[in-house]
Image 1 (tube, rainbow, N blue to C red):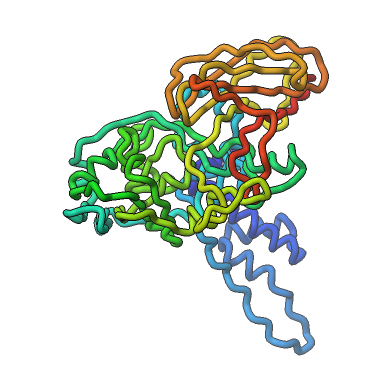
Image 2: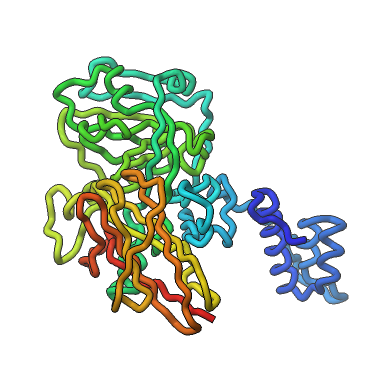
Length: 422
C-alpha cells in the first residue's frame, strides 16, 4: 500500500530514505546492499557503507562521512505535491483539490504565504502588547485573556497580493519579480477571534489616533500599518481560531490579524504587538514592497509607487493546469471572489472568448469571501480554452488585460485555462 505522505512524520521519513538512496547509488552501492544496511543499522550504516573500500596500498586517511544535519522544517503541516505547488517557503493550493469539497478551504489545503519558516511560539510566555501614542492605556494581554474577550466569527477570504503573478509572463510576456503564483494563493475560512476595535478601545484609543500596525513574531518581524478606520471595521479581527480549530502554526498561531478585502500582507501572522500612532506610518511593506512600481505608476513619496490596499476581483476553475477531461458530460466548477461585495454573475467561454454564457452561482455567496460557480459541458475530443469572467454586486468586472508592474501585483485579468478533451 502506498504510504500517506500527508502524514508529516511519514512524509519526512520517506524523503530522508529517498535522499540516502541517492547518496548510496552515487557511491556505487547496490539496491540490495542499501536495503540491508538500512534495515540493520539505519542511515548511519548506509552512509558508512558509502565510504571507499580500503586497499592494500597505503592511502590518505579519509574522514568518516558525517550524518547530514536535519533539514530545517519550513512548515508545521505536511505539504505534499499532490495538494500543493511548492514555492519554497510558500505553498500554492492546487485548485483541483477543491473540486466537490464545498465552500470553505480545509486548513490542510489552505495556501501558505510565509517569508520565513513558520515560527514555534510558546503560548505560555507569549504576550500581545498594545502600545503607542495613539492609546491612553497600553495593554499587555496573555493568551487566556484574549480568549476571554468577547468573540466573533466571520467567513472571509485571505489572498496574497501577488496571486496571479505568473500570468504577467504567461499572458503579457513580461515576467514580474516574486513567487510565480497562478491563482492558488487564495483561501476562504471561518475565522474566530476578537474584533480589533474591541482591543483598541480597551487600550483607550485616542480620537487623534491615525494608524494601527500589527507586528509579527516571525524572523523578520513583518509589519504593515492600516488606518484606524479599517482597524475598527466589524470584521477586522485579532483571530485565534480557523475553521473551528486552534489557529495552525503556519497560519499565525497564537493570533493573527484578519483584514478582510485587503491584500494578504495586511493580515499579519504571529502578532505580538499592536502599535497605534498619531501620524501616518511608513515602513518597508508600504513603501518598497506592496506598492505598484512601473512606467504606468508614478512614485508617491515616501513610497515608490501607489500603496496597495484592496485586493482585486478574480475567478478560477477547480481544475488542474492544464486540465484533461473525458469527452461527454462534464460539470465544470470554480470560484469567484471580490473585496467589494457579493458576486453578481460569472460568465464563461469554452472557445477562447468568442462566445460567452452565464454560469450558475451556488450559495453561500458572502461579501469578501466569494461564491462558487458551475456549468454543464459536453465537449467532443479536442483542445479547448476555458475562460471565466466574474462581476460583483458593485458592477466591477474582470478586465481583459492589466498593466504590468515590477513586483507583479493585481493581476485580475481573465485567464485562459487550457483543457484537452480525450
